[in-house]
Image (cartoon, rainbow, N blue to C red; front, side, top):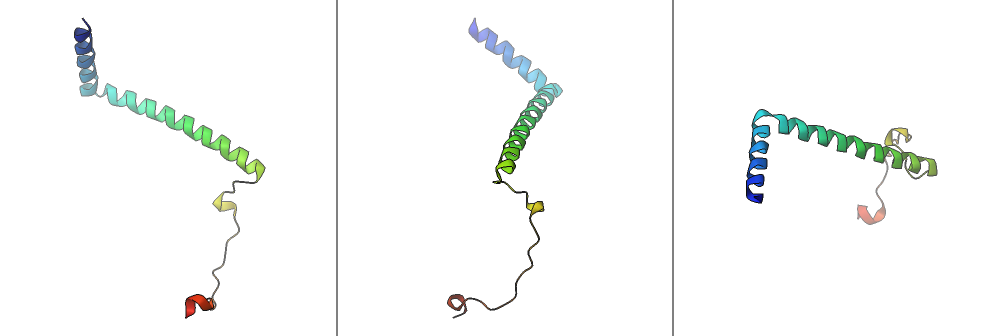
Length: 76
C-alpha cells in the first residue's frame, strides 16, 4: 500500500515539474527563506551598530593612499 502512495506522489511531483508549478513553488519558498534571513541579518547588524561593533563601509571616512618609502625590512 505504501508503494502505491509513493508512486502517486511521485507522479504528481512529475506533473508539477512538467507544468512549471513545482518551480514556482520552490521559488516562492526560496524567496520567503531569503526574506527571513535578510531580516535576521538586519536585526543582528542593528544590534551590532548600537554596540559600536558593526560599521557600514560607506560610513567610513575615505582613506588617501600614502606615498612614501617602504619599511627597511621590505626595501632591502
